[in-house]
Image (cartoon, rainbow, N blue to C red; front, side, top):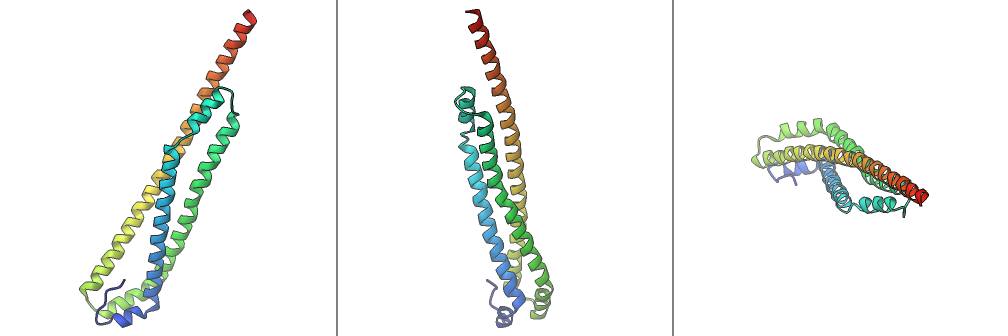
Length: 176
């Protein structure tokens, strides 16, 4: 909330300030939702049932292509949510930039107020935190891309192992 000062009524009634406040609230909501998606993604990774499924594939109890595709589709669907967040964030940033000149004009006309300065410091801190969240989101995306590559290699290794055991079994059956 903008701190109350001598020109508080003038500030509260300004449409540029109201639009910026609304955009900042929406940015906070996006940040919370992105954190939720990342927590869910980490939980998905922690509960990796993929190893169990791949073991079932190795034992011949499941189809490797179906297992792999189901996990790949799950991760792709989960992290596709981040694209929507990025689009919302970009739209809000543009809305804030459009309102910035009017806000700066109002700020310059109101004068120097410590409460106002504290308010704008909080806005700057929020922008810094938002940038940090963007970096963390990118790191999370890279992590899951690497995890996907590792799972593909693991699947291939299991397939090779299964193939060699099948050959060994067939050789033993023929020798009997």
